[in-house]
Each structure stands twice: as C-alpha cells, then as structure tokens.
Amino acid sequence: MSIVSLLGIEVLNNPAKFNDPYEFEITFECLEPLKEDLEWKLTYVGSSRSLDHDQELDSILVGPVPVGVNKFLFQADPPSPELIPASELVSVTVILLSCSYAEREFVRVGYYVNNEYDSEELRENPPAKVQVDHIVRNILAEKPRVTRFNIVWDNEDGNADEYPPEQQVDEEEEEEEEEEQEEEEEELEKGEDDDIAEDDEEDLEEDLEDPEEDDKKSNGSATPVDTVQS
Image 1 (cartoon, rainbow, N blue to C red):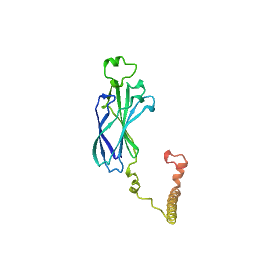
Image 2 (cartoon, one colour; image 1 turned 120 degrees about the vertical axis):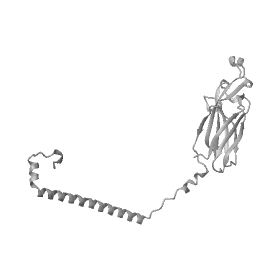
Image 3 (cartoon, rainbow, N blue to C red; image 1 turned 45 degrees about the vertical axis):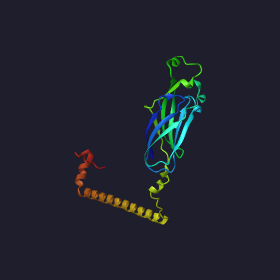
Image 4 (cartoon, one colour; image 1 turned 180 degrees about the vertical axis):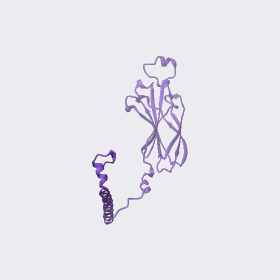
C-alpha cells in the first residue's frame, strides 16, 4: 500500500507563453510519518524521437511531511528552446510531473502540451526560423495520464517483525515425531488388511453354506450379469 496518495493537480497559468514558468497546485495525502522528504520533479520531453532532448525543468523537496492532506504550489522554469530540435518546437509534446521517495519514483503524471503560434498568420505561414516569443503552449489538463509504482517505504524493514520467526525444531524431537508417524501409518495399514481378510472369510463361509446357489450360477441360470462373481 502506498503511504502517499496523489489526490489532485490543478494546472495554473494555462494557456501561457512558451517562455512562461509552469505552475501546479498539488494536493496529496500522507498516511504515516515519513523519515525523508518527497521529491517532486517536472520533465519536458523535447523530442518524440530521442530521449537526449528531455529537460528536467525543476525539482523540489517537500518536507517534513505531516500526516494528513497536504497542498503546495510547484513552479518550474520553461524549457530551453536551444536544446529542442527546431522542427519540434511548434508541435505537440509531453511534460511529466513525478514524485519520488528516497530516490524511488512512486507516481508519474503525464500531460500533452500543444505548442503553436499565437497568430493565424504565423500558423498558416510559419517562418523559416522559429519565433519562440510567439509560441503559445496549452496543457491538456483535463486528460492526464497517471502511472503508479510500488516502492519500498520506511516500514518495510519492520515487516519482518509482523510475522513470528520460524520455530527451530530439535533434531531428536523431529526424529521421534517421524517414528511415531510411521508407526501410526503401519497400524492403520494393518487394520485395513485385517478388515479385508475378515470380509473374504465371510464370503467364503456363505459360499460353503449354499452350494446349490453355486450350481445355479455355473449352470447358466437367469442370474443378472452384474451380480455374477468371477
């Protein structure tokens, strides 16, 4: 079970200019006290063809985190346009907002971002050189993609105490228990053999007491097939 649950993210300052900072109001719940801070990070995907153009826009540590519902404002700088291929500056891309505990990521929220020129003229006739000052971004805040990961929290080291330790069995006691079990099995098998022998004796006595019945069987009388004894 996750100790920290993401309750909601409100995207602020949207739409905005390409060079404006990003702003998010994040609400989360903490169920238990944490020994370390939470690290929140925003990553801009600069290219759909290569990870080399991804930019970490900003990261902050939030803590100490009290138990209960918490809310804070996360601001991040815009990406550096010179690190993004010119052909992908005016296009659809993705930003990733993630949170980690003790360097272990446990939640990631992805948003599509549409970058386009702020005028109809530039959209219809884009210039040869990209004019970053006229690019407007629009984060599709209504359609986030949330991915959660199971991680180790502070209480994992204490999980072993929740289960009783395995009891060590003395070798002599274990051997005695095995011998007793073998004797019980032998007695049980012997008892079953005795019962079978008694049943055979009773059948033999019945056959000896009624020889005429045997003659009927041997002479092919109208005895049902399912009652014929071999």
